[in-house]
Length: 231
Length: 287
Image 1: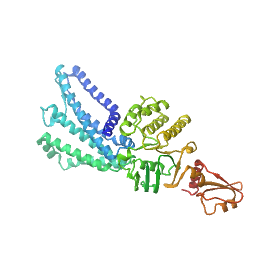
Image 2: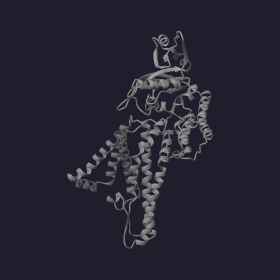
Image 3: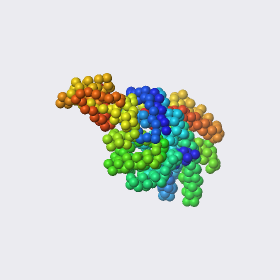
Image 4: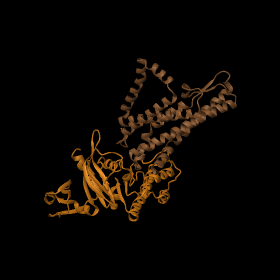
């Protein structure tokens, strides 16, 4: 239990500054949008997205995790399995907190918009693809799963770079870039779009969650004997 | 505490850092773990603290494998040359984090040492000088009270006064709370008096393992006329030979046997000199 508490403490402290900077910039932009809307709202409408920058930020955060924290934890006597367990629990907590902040921010923006009688600010969120009248909990659930997926994917990318070096890492990214190209060539995007549109939000979230867990299991297998020094 | 190193080999892509090393370390004791650059010291210490996996062989602590074994690893505190701490954390946060991982962590002692080394707990690790980071490593090593405490070049950037404080602390700790201290350093002359046992690694192999008392008896420099010296050292392993103004100096493993001969003088060899001789031997052999 002490190890879990300690790991949370270290991970929190290691990413505290980055998080403060990120959220400050994000909310400053939101405030600026309100400010601009007051002056130019009659000419243009504003679209705000909070969730997508958070997905990118979380992916980047996870993509540097191994280099930043693994050597330190191993020197503290933590085994690789313990490290992955603790990081996994931290990911779940971070996703939940991130999702709660996003959903709360949406609520606050809507509240302030109503208060200031601002009608032309649009909040973009992936849930709108499925449901226009979404609840707070639905938004939280979706963001939690998507953030968890972003964290797992970011960590997988970090593992690839850590184990295979820069050449291997960029080759992997190259392979990933090929996927959308192949999708366009074979016109898979259309049935995929239809599949998403016809599926329920919970089915899709369930699939993403399972996929994230599978990704994490792959990462665990790769890190079983990993050394402190990256390639 | 007993460390068994059984046929350990560690290879990297293009080189072999350790080759079939086998030995035993037993504590409580202060062990000097020595060797010139590239001898394999840090590689071994990384293996001993579970940071890397062996290519072949195993390392056991009290009969238990150390790799990915938290119950064994929490008894080991490894202070490496660098990268021991998170740059974003303050000294106070670093010490707080240590509390969670070292079961015998002594917070009171850590606070006392902070004052000894004049560190400000509010300072971020990133803003510290090299010497200050080394001091933080020393504080962590001692306050962890881990049964096996490893210091790999612990005093980079520390001045003479701070290094002496470290030596004093090491002796004090070994008296008050005996543990197995493993100290790897290049400042051998300064630290040699502290060592109770000496391990010398050379080109990935264990060259020598001797207690401080055995050292004086086993490693001897024989000086004199070339023929007399050659006669006296025949049959012994020669570490290094050197001729200067008709006088020959040969450093040999005496293995406790008496060296007799006419017109020769026998002198003991310091650890520092021994490592210099080993390095010269390496250069001569073209390795």
